[in-house]
Image (cartoon, rainbow, N blue to C red; front, side, top):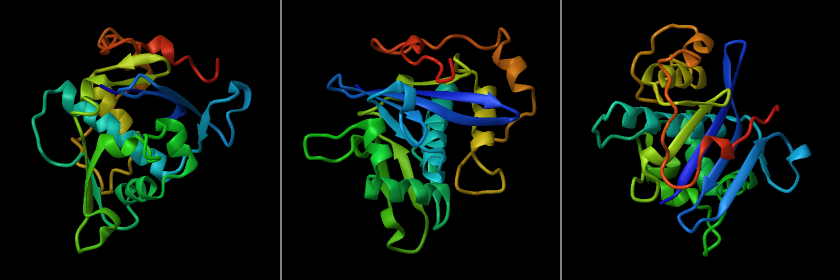
Length: 213
C-alpha cells in the first residue's frame, strides 16, 4: 500500500504546505519541498503554493478527517465546477505538471502515480455538472495518510477541520466540509488533545523534517 505525509506550517493564521513525502506501493520514495527549486535540499522535487496544490492538500486532509471520525460515505471528497479547486486539481492530474511528477513519481507507463490514488467523475467537465474526486482506498488507505502541523502529527478532527478551513474559502461549495469550530490552532496543537498518529509501514513523522529547520 502507498503512504503519504503532508507537512504543513502555521504562521499568522495561515496554514500552507511545506513538504511532502510519498512512498509508492513498490517502495519508491518521492520528496518535494515548497519553492521554485529544491534549493538547499538538493536533488529532490519542488512545488509552489497554487490552487491545485491547495486542492490536493484539502483532498487528502478531508480523507484523513473522514477516517478519524469513522465516517462511512461513498460520496466524493471534493467536487466543483469550472474555476473551483476541484477543477484545478482535476486539470493538474490530466496535464501532469512537473510538480505533480516530483511529488508522486511516475508509473511504468510514464503516468503520475497520483492517477491511481484518486477516482474521478466528469473529468474535464465534459458534461453539465461538477467534477468529483474521491480516494481510492485500495491504492492509498486513509489511515496511511499523515498530516503534520508544525512537525506535530495531527489526528484530532477539530484541528483537521481548522486546517481544511484555512485551505478552503468557506464560502466555496467545492468541498463537502463539516462546520469548523473556532479556536487557537497553536494552543490546541500543543495540548493533550493531540496524539501522535500510528502510521502503517515504515514511514514515521521523523521521515519529514521541518523545512525551515
